[in-house]
Length: 397
Ligand SMILES: *Cc1c(COP(=O)(O)O)cnc(C)c1O
Image (spheres, rainbow, N blue to C red):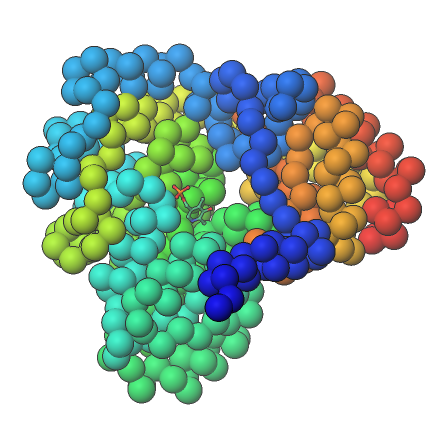
């Protein structure tokens, strides 16, 4: 008899050989522009906490007050014993920011996507999904049992052809896209996607995880940025990035939200978001609405870094980006790991992102409102140094 678990070791060995192996590293203390990573102080370019709110005293105070009032757990599904007025306040605040009729809070952004997609489409339906979409959109599509077709990244022409050829064979159709692509930093062509959705009678779900609090005049996301506020579409997002907490949401029409409350398995059959997370996210939304200066500072930092890189490292080819996420590609996972390690030794935390997360290995830099000019200057100085000494990195330009 063979050991039915023996394949685990072989599989891990394969992962190691490809330099795809990953493990966790502890960060001590509060999150921020600098953190202590495995005992070493580093400048943090690896965080999704774009506005620096995860370490904000007001979020922490709101979370602590909610624990004092409601305890630590919400004790049940929202439909049974897990619903609090606090959840409703948060949902109203999200809907007000997004200017939608309503919203629904899930326990994570991942679960929001799984829950929305599986409720909206099934066996007789078609899902069209950008090739670079987040894992939660891809797995939501698979879990829904709909036919799934991927279109090349942001390629409206191919998407249109696929719709012309296939739309009529299915009952409902759902187009899925990230708004800010999480591992590249570019934006989806939202107005063109809305036009196609209209033309071919498709629903459109846009995942604003990296855009909420960051993009758009009031931080409402790409929908606002592209002037599409008020259009019929399904917006998903997370409370765990710029909003500094944990949880996810779907925002849209009252009908949509009412339907999801009745049909979303990942909302119905899971425990309501904890009081602390709910209160922290609510405090964050108020800050996003009332203090645009954090978003302004974030964008100032993005422009400062882009300008410095252009002046001092003109050969370093950044992937096209319209967000605080900046990436440069490397020829292999091994090269990316090497660059990540050199950055880390110089006090910069900007991780190598490798397959299977992305098709090509890269270093991913994400900026925060709380980065100081000196942090950004240090990053550029270290990148210059690496470029100078590391043959592989300079070869990629
Ligand atoms: C991070 C992310 C999610 C998942 O959100 P969580 O709240 O962390 O589960 C979903 N979609 C995209 C595009 C993301 O970047």
